[in-house]
Image 1: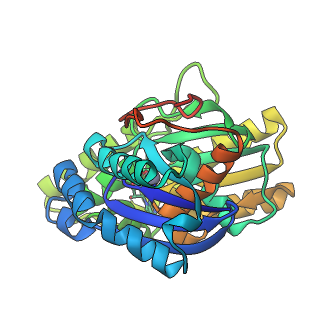
Image 2: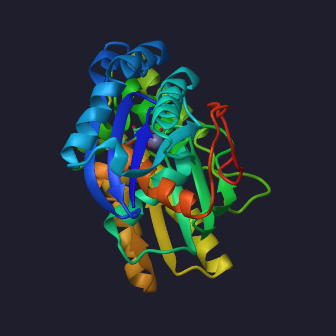
Length: 337
Ligand code: KG4
Ligand code: ZN
């Protein structure tokens, strides 16, 4: 079955056709990134306007690249939460219009579930149950994925997300948006122990994260150096902060897997593109003889293919939305639409 996946939760207008949740037939992404660089971060209103302008064209291109027409599509999957509300509403309303005019069933998809599903595109044998680390610009979750549609968050950040911490650190160090990706690139040869960072600690939970202390550490250190006429070494500071974030993500995930008896680990979300994170998890999983799945780099960030992949499994589980479907800025990964 062909599923059309529509994603507009942030600054990517992305539409894709995926067959049976696994085979990508097309994957078209239009991004308003260039405009946001001017402001050092995503400007929600600009993102929404660009979605409105290009979503029809992106959808036509996705169908064309897949060599099919709307009548060949079995379900229309759309990201309905969480994300920037104005941005989400463009995708949701477009999907509702398509569904109404064509009679094709509408399937709402949770953005973080779709990040996990990005792995189904690359790993044909991957099936739940497994333990997932989802690290993106807005979320850092350790999740038990019990079935295609049954999730339980067992650890999460108490303050900033991992991606947010990396983005803000990059900004303070003078790197352009998107910070996390640029910080990864400049830190390749830096010394990860050049600075002593605070050790993120959260009372009362073995698996929860806290990244705001690390962010504050970078801001204070850089400002202090500037005031005393020193120039921060961006490579070393970048490697140090990434190392601290990755250590925390990896430590907690490893502990959760041991405690809960998982030997299959899945990485997901934009931060799963990070080279240090990928290396660290590869080492852990090799040493413990665990299976590791990571999305291909092109599916780590927001895309329509992951929405179509998760949409397929939601459809198979009987999930449908009516024309009263609304977008939500926040929503737990466990919840139903
Ligand atoms: O999943 P995503 O594309 O959007 C959200 O759902 O938030 O994640 C975006 C986040 C940003 O914080 C971005 O800086 C981060 O993923 N990111 C990276 C890398 N590529 C993207 N962080 C670290 N290293 C990277 N290579
Ligand atoms: Zn995302």
